Image (cartoon, one colour):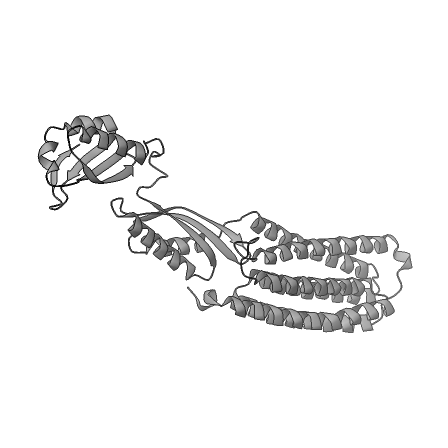
Amino acid sequence: MNAAATTPLSDKHEVARRTTWVSVAVNSVLVVLQIAVGVLAHSQALIADGVHSLADIVSDFVVLLANRHSGAKPDADHNYGHSRYETVASLFLGALLIAVGVGMLARAGSRIANLGEIPPVHLSALFVALFVLVSKEGLFRYMLREAQRVRSAMLIANAWHARSDAASSLVVALGIVGSLAGVRLLDPIAAAIVGFMVARMGWVFGWDALQDLSDRALDDTTAADLRALLAATPGVRDVHGMRTRKTGDLALVDAHILVDPWISVSEGHYIAESARARLLTDARVLDALIHVDPEDDMHVRSVANLPPREQVAARLREALAAHGVLLRDITLHYLSTGIEIQVTLASAQDAPRLAAVDLEALRAQLGAQRLNVVQPVERQTVKSQG
């Protein structure tokens, strides 16, 4: 596991807060500059880019809100915590960008339909577009570096959003250059391209968030890492039925582990707790539920149709009591091949009376695969049938 995978959650929220406020500050300056100069310089593309920057500010505040609430501890209403606030924020951000992009396309289409009314673009629009391009590219590099350091999907998405801003500013600059060269059509075309880029980015973010909200599993590589952690736990013979689902940047894991079917319940529980503790050392895992199996229940028949303990124990005690044999303990092993029974006599004096019991017939009557009888002191098997 790399160092980034172990980034504390508090560091992630601090980086989110800091980088987002930097983005807010940069975009606040740019949006005023773009819209003001765009209006004065008659550049539809620059105004569209300014609206894009305004949408960035709104999305930044969405990120800040999600960052604040996603770090809240689990409560009665959210037993697994609030990590999906980040995913909901990404979905909202995607929807916002789609709406902004469609609006830009509509406005650009209207301008293209009325080319004769488009006034010439002033040179100042080009200088602003180039300044915005450099600013957005610098913001992208800063945000991506910090987001990758703390492995935050939401922050990485927000960083690439800044890169899309830089790309749209480049398109705007090219459109303004073309318009200054006398091809006025290029400015509204640049605005339309910006609108398409914004809408497409919104679709990507929204679709990705929707998949996570629909319990998307982790990628194959990450799932293999988690499976290896479980399989390396002492006492675990195999891992099967592992399922994962994302919740924000983290994941919930359900898995079945195969253990020795003859160990005690408490030892099986200990192995399961050890396996769970290993999983939780991976910072990508929020919580895990480990189910202990004595057999691979995905490839053997179910034991649910076997008789319950109360029924088996009652019939067993009744049959042996008829011969004066009393029992101290009854241990049942429910396996796909049938029930395996081990009984411990109440005292050594019961052993001679056991000779009068047809254990093979009793085993068949109980539908057991095996029936072992053990003396209480010597713990030796006095008779085994099966």
